[in-house]
Image (cartoon, rainbow, N blue to C red; front, side, top):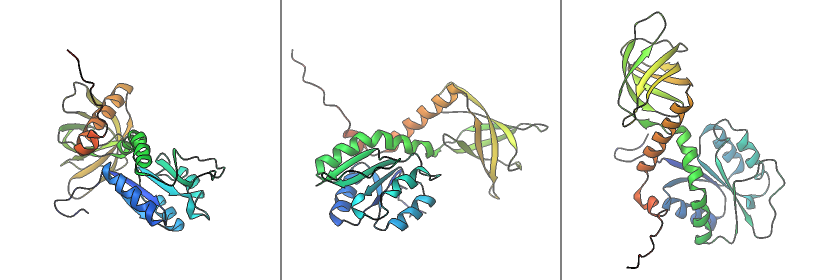
Length: 251
């Protein structure tokens, strides 16, 4: 749980390296892109972390040797991280091991600030898209739950992601029950009416619904809406790195 007044980082990366210069350079540059970096120097510990937690990016220093290259393949079999954006760091002239799972990006030592910045800038869109897949956006709006054999239940949304919705509801719900949930996103004309499943309920009158089927139009609208909210939550210093300088206009 975050301390009062502190925000939970949106973008998270796992950096697997035991080289102080590499970790310092990578974490400093990732900070500039508002990416919170967790450093791990042990391959076995890194594998356990990848099995338990979600990361938007993983940076692997192949200089660790041993079973380090296997991490790339293990990531693709991880339920939480199979689509994460991967980077490999290798020494100049040393080929990457021939594995089925290839990294999305490769950086060769000696690393320079310009190289790291350029690589992260090229990868940033993919990292944000990966984050968006799990991003839970606060949403306070009226909604209705329709269940067979019962009257419609009024509720209020708490947050929303690409895969589901959390609500506050006074009526008792049954986990595992299939329902329809109706709601609208602020600023959008489209009204959602989505087949869903009750995943969980608690004693605080909260419940989680998983979307079972979204129409193509609904999916596109939801993804675009979440992407806009995610981008708005990033620091302006990050956005400025992607601004294109306008050419001078001659009279």
